[in-house]
Image (tube, rainbow, N blue to C red):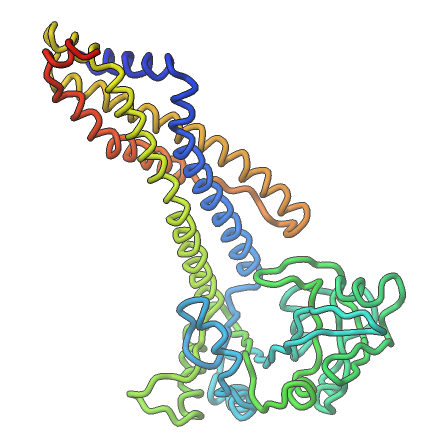
Length: 414
């Protein structure tokens, strides 16, 4: 029996029982569609974040306290580690220590909410240099002005707020000149950022920036920083600048050669690679969880194939009686199982692509304007390969059972 003939018989058997065949492949269909959506959305998120990061320039360097995060649980370590102090930033600003450093600014994260006359909103709040922030994230002001370096030195209680924060707290009324409350302190709104939306990992419209000195003294009660953002004078000097920063901080913190650093330094390219790794790992993890549906679908295929073989026992006996070999019987039923899962995978890929496109359109419309639809060709190949493998694995046992049936007993089966 030729392979083409085996495929024709398998296809005909599937076509005869359309409803049962569809219900059989439903688990495969759902599993593949879900995996395709995970891969597509993960790829879209990766492209969005890396696209935003790449727009900042290759000269950017980030310095954070504690160990470099290796997972989601270790990210919060940077908020409680107190290794980055004012002395560190003073040493890093000395040309003799880091000759290729163009600029460096400190930031602190301010937890909590902001309120105004009974209206409360929980934005993302930072203490830092607003002018650097405006330039770095290309986030111009629509109203008012930024606070100055002198305001930072004088611990002024000034704030620049994002577009959405203004809407939530002030509605249609003017915000500049009004006072918002953060914890038990009142801050004067001196400026409002223009509508910008999502940039890299956070939303500019949900931002409040105050002087870092004020945040440290009146809000957080700390004398350390959560992050330094530095700029090398040229992208070609980034590696040398990172080496100089690490050397300076190790000397400042009195860390010997055998001891581990209590800080980590990463370039923007390194940050992009780290984000890419995290997103890829998360996508793979979620896809593996969803892949359980494929196992359930495979068991369903095996069950239906066993039922089909029982129903067609006399057919198997007749084929063996006229000369069909065990190999040809096994081949026929194995092809039938593979075709079932193949069709399930094909429909799942199509549905996964359609739903991914619709979700991408919705995300671009309501969440991130720069979100683009992504459906990697490698994901399609992976989907078809996995479904074929599922058909092969879960179809092998029923096919072997059919091939080993005794022709005499099969012909006598009622």
